Image (cartoon, rainbow, N blue to C red):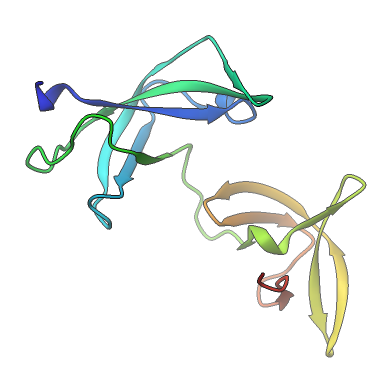
Length: 148
């Protein structure tokens, strides 16, 4: 096997596939080498959906740009991040702080020791954080749900 010809295939949910384009930058990690980021870029988006347990995904292929001395092996599990764009100086909160009720998104804000429900509008999501585009100001204290 030519280890310089490896590529990564990842599943992208149908709600996100419209944001993916060939040439977008990507990176991934593998459990075998925690903390090591492998850079790459999107080279293909398969047009046919994969449906499993009523979940619709599409296969996206990522070309690997740096093989880090050929340490990667076939069939390793990869955690892939595809860069959709960059946003700077945005207000973001942990996604777990955002709740939904009848189509409304809200967070709980601490005001004078009281927890108040505050409607918010959200933007981009990046891993565990979600951008807040309206309804919350920088410096306000939000209440996170209890950890399990």
